[in-house]
Length: 274
Image (cartoon, rainbow, N blue to C red; front, side):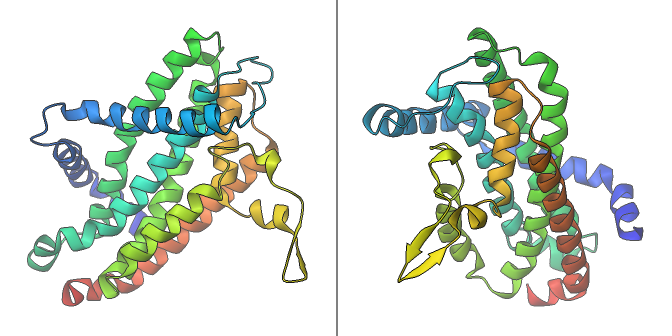
């Protein structure tokens, strides 16, 4: 708790570093912050053509919203995933990217990780606003649910920050971490119901003669529950399943506490290792 209070006292530094990260993301680009919208839109078009048009993946209409638009269904899962992926990847690299600062000036090192993660919240918020406007245009009653979207956005931020803190330490000691993460996130993406509905996952499957409880293992994925929560709020316009709420809050709490504990344990040696 003392460490959390200390970080709270560094909120001005966190704010300044977050602003620096936001400004630096698209520095010297012609379109600037517009890229924060163009990138997910381009991804949406590609996935909609491949999975919605060519492969004809069928997704259930929103209940009770009645919306039946594959692209909007896709974005309700893709935007939270993209935020989490960017936050974890960026936060993991924050210490190594600022090695000169870490080795020359003493300050709470975790603020670098936190600032990077929080900078992606800005993009996350912009994308959610645009998505909400599109949902409204198609008749979704999304406005009453936006407060809960913000709440679970903060829960997802806590989850991403916890993972980023752990991986930031690992990346200092073992630089191959970033490459392993790149491979793992590709697998994690397709193990999450973003481009296909979770109903397509069978209860079990057989591998080398061994029966595997595939559905049970699948539901251990925290992002499966986060995607379900955001789709329930934005696409279905209803309160999420209680199990998904409990799982997401629990996963975020465990990740943040574990990340914070590991980071505080190894922080004294970070400057030396860098």
